[in-house]
Amino acid sequence: MQSSPPNSPTQVPPLERSHWVAFAGILLMLSGLFDIINGFVAILDHGYYETTANHGNRLLIFNYTAWGWIWVVVGIAQVLASLGVLLGVRAARITGIVLASFCLVGQMMFISAFPYWSLFTMLMSVLVIYGLLAEPHHVEGLRV
Image (tube, rainbow, N blue to C red; front, side):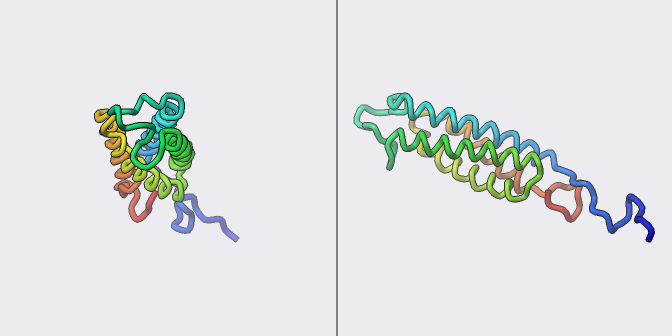
């Protein structure tokens, strides 16, 4: 039996990654690290995110400690998903899109406390979603 030549159509081509995917993976990791920091700030310093005196110890529907732990868990999940994205795992890309969407919506709740930081983080989430959804042009017919 003959072995097929290296460039034969029967062999699977090496996985080529889009630069947008790599960029989105790095941004997803940074966003996860920022969310972990936001979470620990909310857990350790409740007054840091308060914007008015009558706001109390709540941020919309949960208290600051609950939001802090939510952000820590989401941040850890984002960091893990970003590692999967950088390794080329398709499930990690889908997970990254879901987590970036959650982060995008969640930052709207913090916009009254830190508008510029929230807008910056929301922009990062939009770039992550675009980068993970973008079809690479250099690999025809293949989603990476």
